[in-house]
Image (cartoon, rainbow, N blue to C red):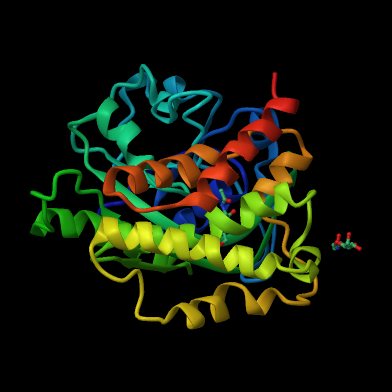
Length: 329
Ligand SMILES: *[C@@H]1O[C@H](CO)[C@@H](O)[C@H](O)[C@H]1NC(C)=O
Ligand SMILES: *[C@@H]1O[C@H](CO)[C@@H](O)[C@H](O)[C@H]1NC(C)=O
């Protein structure tokens, strides 16, 4: 088998774990590192993982900008984008601005939220896009030091903006090659026949727990669920996202009843030790931008377009913007 050449953009917790496992799976892995460039170039990543044990990861190549990664006519089969999607701050596709790559290069988006693909599709209409939904708990505690928990599962699906595309043999091979490489590296990876459905399912949690934990005074999951009435508000908000998602994908988001969904997404957090700190809460506490556009706004836009009522999400979105405006800029 030909070795895949992969460029990872975004050298935080997620990008580093994927780069590491893909290299172990046999790929040639280059990384674009921003703030941690010097450290990674010199000594690589040190990873402490419950799933894989401790290890270190030296990317085959380390670059300080995406542009550099394309000098000398470097070619990549896949570009993995593991950055946050913050379209209100910068067009997410600008991470590849000025980079010249072949039409055959596949852009793989490992980002949360809804509508994250549109920015890349608009900027690079010739390139195929793989939309990935990731279940991974990892963070960079300081430059080059990565902590990873137990999970590393990914679903990939071809982004099909106008529904005329389908899985040709070539598209399927392009998905399978990447999946095989992840599996060889010990990750749980699969090709999804309906990736948007999975994306919507994941955003049920993200669009409710994340912003509510911030708006409820910066509360971790235990605190939040101990507040009178809060669990019901979270449920109502989840039900809104479920209705919108179902209207978009034109089928149920899962085979589970709503009560079973709550049983998966809410009840296990009652009294969970340690409590969950949703990523938006972590961003809020560190005065960083929150991913409200792709987690809330794009969801609300779909609701408006399809005539689905979403009173909670609209209020939540407006309040999140207000809270963020107090510390950003
Ligand atoms: C979305 O939820 C997952 C857990 O299901 C979490 O790992 C991730 O950080 C969340 N993303 C955002 C942007 O809130
Ligand atoms: C979660 O919030 C509660 C209430 O503020 C606090 O006592 C507890 O220390 C927090 N848990 C962690 C792990 O920070």
